[in-house]
Image (spheres, rainbow, N blue to C red):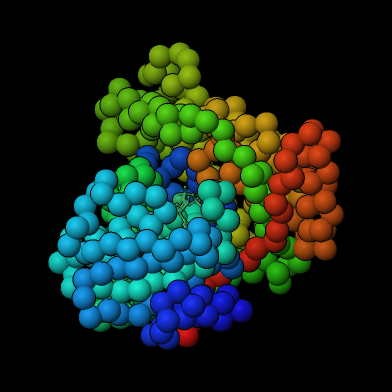
Length: 388
Ligand code: ADP
Ligand code: MG
């Protein structure tokens, strides 16, 4: 459906047929928050919500982009690209072409029509979906060989997209999103080990067990997000330096008490406790999934939320209310996901209760006088690739 609309959008904007349509998913992290920059573990899934890109090569070095979300055409030349020169939404797409060329891959001009179905700025990574859709289109059209079934080449493409977001867009993100978008699998969660640079696919047969993941997009983003993110990151780095290790990943949950005693009293101990216990919770979630113990997965979600709320202090009233309401109305467990201070929460729910839990969360927000959240069920979807 979206494939057809982005195809006709391309024809309407550029007056020709595209050579093809490619798409890439957004992601949601099941557990393992604020662990990536501590060299830890995370467990994202690819979403069924995707960004779609229709593309056609051009004989010159011009790039033209149109997005259905902005209804705007942006035109630039590959010869003029540099960080800070292109700003706004088109930087995410153009930045990928720039990053490819910067790393020695031959690209040329292209027309791109974009239609993204990942909500923008909801913590579900519409940015990585857009980058990765452009990246697989470019890989195929320019015969770069980075998008096939080879995991190592896909990991390389993910790193190039993350480079585009960090250096060209200048958004200091961790790299999980692009890896999830390019390497996720349907009905699998991806265990990412940042320190080891490995990915393990973990079966996630939720529907077979009558379960579903409910995403609750609070539709809020509180100010100071970037400052808070940076300050948490610095606190973790300072703690690691004080403790004489490269990263907090070096500690096991079993060492926690003795590690905390070596730190000054105060928030720094809470930050370290979150990171060390959260990495442990990712391991235990994977064990519970393998043991088909979903009740335990729910408890780990709950414990993760409490740790993020009380120790890492990155939740907010909207996330707390969504999580609490989901639990009260039948979820096995619920937690905020993403950086915090807004964005989305997730709940593990019996499939037949999904509409009731969603209604309860919408009702609770209405009673609080807040803007309606957007609640929807998701299952783990396939990675970036060609659709047409
Ligand atoms: P998230 O990745 O969580 O959705 P970000 O702030 O990282 O939030 O990225 C959102 C930004 O990405 C948008 O503000 C916009 O600039 C850009 N973007 C993502 N998808 C699209 C799209 N389909 N069309 C235009 N811009 C998009
Ligand atoms: Mg993003």
